[in-house]
Amino acid sequence: MSVMKIAIVSRHDPADVSAWSGTPYFITREIKKISGDVVVVRAQKTAWLLMLTKAFRYLFRKFGSSIDLSVTGTYSRTVGKEIQKQIDQVKPEIIVGIAASPELANIHTNAPILHISDATYAIMADYYPEQSRIPNWLWREGNEIERKVIGKSFYSIFPSQWAMNSAQKDYDADPNKLKFIRLGANVGALPDVSDAYLEKKFGGKCNLLFMGKDWDRKGGDIILSAFQHIQKAGIDAQLTIVGCDPFSGSPPEGVTVYENLRKSEPEQFELYNKLFSEASLFVLPTRAEAYGLVFAEAAAFATPAVAPTTGGVPSVVDDGKSGVLLPSSADGKDYAEAIIKLWEDKEKLAEMAIYAHKKYVNELNWDKWRDDFSLLLNNLQTADSLKQESAGGS
Image 1 (cartoon, rainbow, N blue to C red):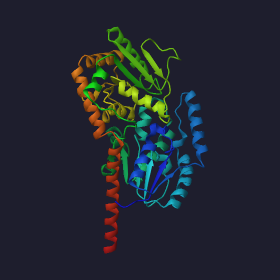
Image 2: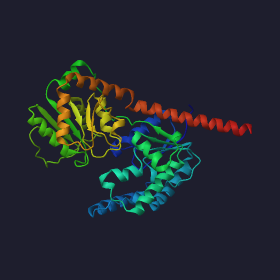
Image 3: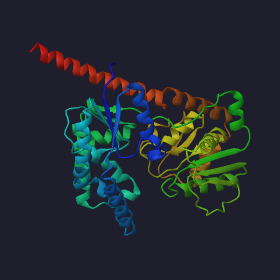
Image 4: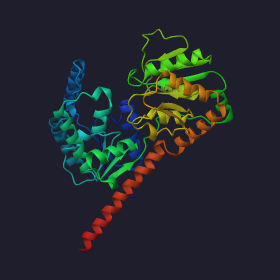
């Protein structure tokens, strides 16, 4: 494949490994491995406008409304003008948008657009609690932006069947233009999944790992209730919470809290990976999840997951194989029963761990993402070549 000039359009800074769980950073890194001619395009002169929409969003949330002005036509057109100028200067052969629907909806270009996102506006607005009180006018504008960007994209790329189904059902997307590519795990050095490694994971204390900044949405109350049930059952267990501190510095007995681990800090990233390595089970009773990169990260360390059947989770966790998926209505007692049943079947645990690691190796890593993305670029080049040949022969 010849080198193609690629413009990456992203609301988040692809140089920041912490932005949007590191997804723009890793996608940009992988695309640069494919092409040596990659330019990042961002609306930096109008960044103040995005900050203003965030401030309004926070303010409206205090009054019980969910209003995100960054999905309005006014925002899209204003930011789009700045993006358009840069696109016109760069003259890319391909445009890759990373969660950039408002930024791309109103630009005009002959270059094919590859739209990458983990969800659509329609399912996010219906699904996430903080986005469930949207006024009708904003619902219409947000959906119109999404319809535009999906309609003008050569490919719309999603990491879950849940999001793909919405693109087709809610926006009449052409099925041939919808592509399923899972996002990769953002992990460091991986262990050798040996018998000794598995014995250490499952042979001693039952180490439960929970990660999430939003304690309520991620189901923190459910994991805490489950942990208490497990303790009452007489199982020697430990719960580690990463990303938030619901106990204000005074966690219950058996609970360890790491309120904030930064992947950009080498020592903290090493600890982050160590926690996955030492965990017996990764438990996340999330109430809403578009994808869940943490499930891919758990799989990288051969750590089976226990989670609900919701959103994009079933595209990352294979029920009964790399973990256990419970109904969205499951409570702490249900999670405790599932965990205890698993913990008492060490052979099943080991099978799940090995399967999870293989799933990471085969499906949930960035090398795999790059291979799948390269195929799409090849398709674009082939289509362009045929188009040129057809024009030359007419």
